[in-house]
Image (cartoon, rainbow over all chains, first blue to last red; front, side, top):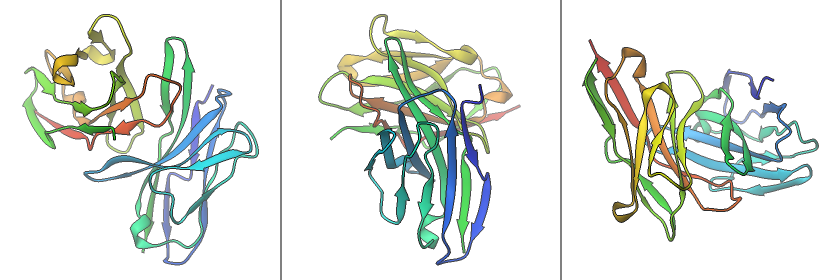
Length: 114
Length: 114
């Protein structure tokens, strides 16, 4: 049981390039989310999904796209990278079953846009 | 709108001394509450959570937190800090429903000196 796996761990992009951050989970959780972490700002929700085929915007969605074709995978796409997207990105799943509730986070992707 | 405040950006504590991290929230009802820890370069690990019942909650690594409804607080404590406790700590709150959109505080960085 690997939990939540994110790839790559580190990435450097040039302004205007595109890329996809991968997130995969093996816990069969319906809910998945992408957060970005910036110094002094905690974690902010980018996009989330309540199940395969269903996605919605979070607090800071601009410049990012997501899709959810399977329960296991929830990739985050940067269409045209900007320096303001330099951040650490976390994928997480959410469980709510009785006393078993909360987020499970991946180990993060540190992205630098130059 | 819900919000989470961690008043202390950075705390320095001596090894073996006690530690208390503050968390205050603004919410329309009693939320569920979490504390996460993030070691340098790592993802977020759940320390403890509160949903109902005893307002003093025990977590992993010797941490505990106390929910005080009258003060809208959920402070984290540890009686004796170890060097390995040096990390960033995040408080998070969410509604008492299957709503996965937590609000995170900005975090408190803990430095442990020998």
